[in-house]
Amino acid sequence: MENQNDQIKTRLEKLENLRQMGINPYPYRFAATHSAAGLNAAGDGLVESGGPVSVAGRLVAIRRQGKAAFCHIKDDHHRIQAYVRADEVGEAAFAMFDLTDLGDFVGFTGAMMRTKTGELTLRAKTVELLSKAIRPLPVIKVEEVDGHIVVHDEVTDVEFRYRQRHVDLATNDGVAEVFIRRAKIVQALRGYLVEQGFLEVETPVLQVLYGGAAATPFTSHHKALDMPLFLRISDELYLKRLVMGGFNRVFEIGKDFRNEGIDRNHNPEFTMVEFYQAYADYTDMMAHMEAVWQRCAQAVHGSNRFEYQGVMLDVSSPWKRMTMAQALDELAGVKVEGMKDAELTALAVQHGGDPDHIPSRGLAIAHLFETLCEAKLIQPTFIIDFPHETTPLCKSHRDNPALVERFEPYIFGWEIGNAYSELNDPQKQKTLFEEQAARRAHGDQEAHPFDTDFVKAMEYGMPPMGGAGIGVDRMIMLLTNAYSIRDVIFFPTMKPVKPA
Image (cartoon, rainbow, N blue to C red; front, side, top):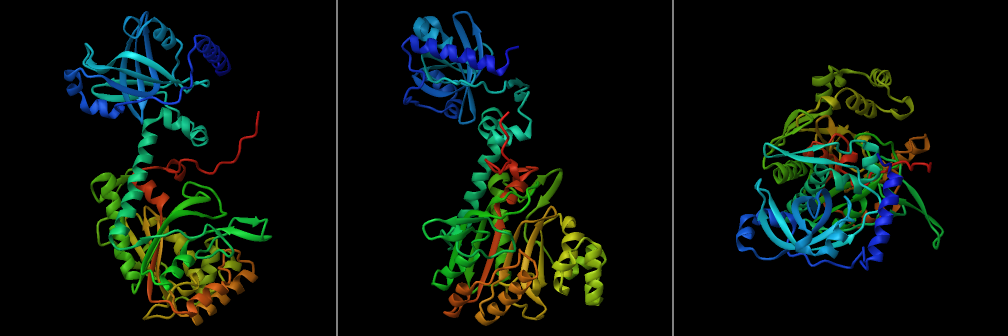
């Protein structure tokens, strides 16, 4: 069997032969009248009309039979068969076609027919080479069994697939379907927010001071201004400024960046949607959260119920609501309300907490919840009413000042969003930023930096507001049954491979 270097050498020789024949192996355009999907849909109507059609695509299968050949091309991830005969396309064109390989792009013009086995096929009158592939794609065998397409020898090496996504897409049709569904989900998400009167906006990705979440940023430097800049970890503080400026409902779908570990559920560059609504609170955000998930599930499944990794999930309203304290009691048997601060801290440390990062009762409770409860929240659940130490940007609970009006939605044991009744008291905001600054001074690098400019903006007046964020990549993982976040990001962050 030829190795890849031998195959490349053979293809380069064919390329030179084509040029010597006066053929441009990389022409500028091809006037296609139909897509492969369009030909398959039109079917027998085109066979009966006998009219000329043109289609282009990548060669994915060739069966040569002397002066004739059957082949399949793939166009926009749909397949169509073509039949090429030397006495119909001409000897010169057939000689050119004889130098094609799997992976080349070709264009056909001809009429549609049915073969003896009933397969819809384009009977070529002309054939053009549109791009000669030098490097061979992995060989994939596709056959039809009982009316279903069966694929053998798929590219299954995940490292190769993530690093060479173009090859992954060209050879694995199922991968393309994931990203088609991703587009439908994002469109459904955007459509819901627009229908609800939210204005889509754009805010800075490069920020002088990052904020809006507890995370470590990526840092950069602006040469002309000689100043550090940060890739945003959240859109929150700029979106709130827009609400202060008079836009009552705003949203942004965009990339955020967090300098953290990479695992099944985390990629340093990820997609978030954040939306903010004046005169609302976190209960309004719960209603939006349920509606968004239902809209997106309907977009790809036609139902509020779908399966993820063998578990049937149902995003129908209403979702279960539990306070963090209730979750610890019900799911872990830990009754935090009856425990002293020292007991909570000791229990948190016992369950892996860093004593330096759980200096308060509230942070001990949050750590215990994350450790003991999160993985048990399978069906959609809102965890509400967090300890006030967990966020500097949220209103105190109207009935209990030790808590804040915050919720996180959970599905399949994953936190898939975050929402607040947003804090709009500038004096309280200043105090909370000061508390966060003290934590940073004691080594908590994920504590929120003090943002003087944001406090000043709040002093001009900020209306009551509800705000929410959703991790779009995790949403897509769940709705497409993808095991890893890398399966739903076209080009996930990968460590470079050292040259051999």
